Image (cartoon, rainbow, N blue to C red; front, side, top):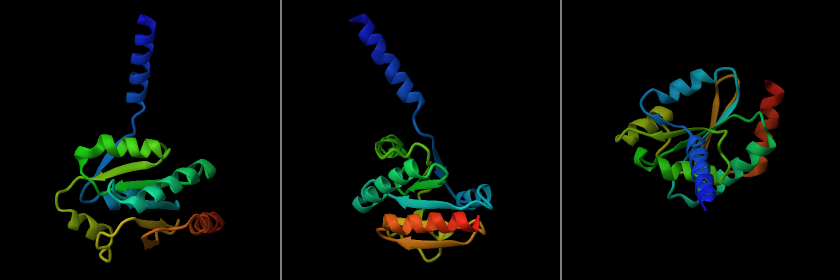
Length: 159
């Protein structure tokens, strides 16, 4: 019985140490992300725990990360930093451990959204496809697997 308890403790410790790092998305974070990935194509998806369509998109992103090992994905939750544990659990559920993860960490969310895109009014999910040239295309609402895979193929041709 003691060995079973010790095993459970080890598994819990391993799971806790493998927890996904979630960075705080504050003023300047958008530019920091773009600068850090200059010259490389990537996808940036905004989502929320309360958005059911977002969960469908997270599931799709998880599958695509498994299929395309070189896909670079950034996931930004528009929830609260106090919800990081639930956010991390959701990302783990959808196998998004390789995705770079962020959470809105400014009480003035409108300012963060405006900094991301002056044409974004908070609708979710919101996905940005960034090319290696730094230009982006924004899509609000549900996106399809074919649409994302076309972008992946095209970005590989250009890159």
